[in-house]
Image 1 (cartoon, rainbow, N blue to C red):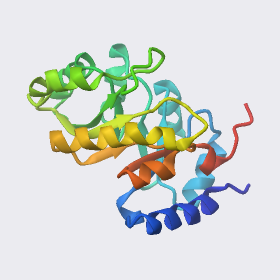
Image 2: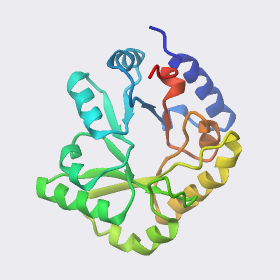
Image 3: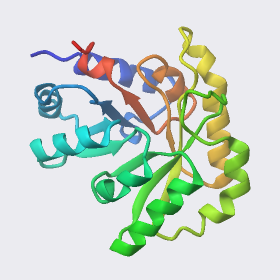
Image 4: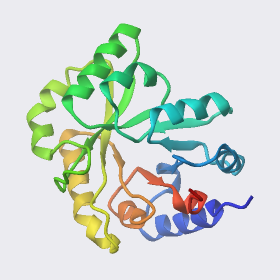
Length: 220
């Protein structure tokens, strides 16, 4: 099996060099949803250790099947209240805390279990009805409440701009996310997918979520 991962890495390092970024300061999260275990294992053998999953049950099944040293799992899909108990302690980072209600529920259960949970707050900057995430205005109005959630480690922000053919159209959303993170004193920015990761790097992404460019097209 041959993955496009190494070709992507060469391009990634080239773009980092062009925009004055250290590639080691950016985490490539390989989006492994719906990918077979064999492809994930192959990527792991090529020293890809961070994998992002959208669906909790699928993620947990893969974690059980691939208990590999150093592998790191990221939850990048929506978090439902009734699934929170299943994900605590299972992911190095939850990218998709999309409301104060979900943050509060995670905090409550993490406190009960004596855990600290690293999270990103998901923003819906384009106000798309079909996407999860809170508005910037809502986050700012609730920020003081977020800071009181002692079991959460709020490390940064995440967003998904509208899907468009021209990656340049994602730039204003990435710029807005970066400015908001700076305003709140947050360091991590999860932004950029296979279609617009280069623009995301130019705008300060610290985590990019890339599937097709790592694994190739899914067969199903």
